Length: 59
Image (cartoon, rainbow, N blue to C red):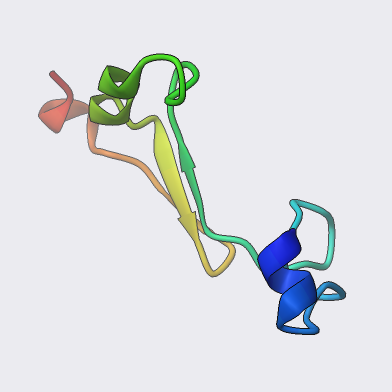
């Protein structure tokens, strides 16, 4: 949020809200507490499109 404010783009970036731009990596846990959850990505959202790993490639 702070970076968006510094760029003067808080109306379109900085928080996850309807109408704002966001790229998201969803993981099953808190990566600040346990970095290993970054190896277990549930999905990635880029430009409004959701990308999931095919079932055949899941560990």
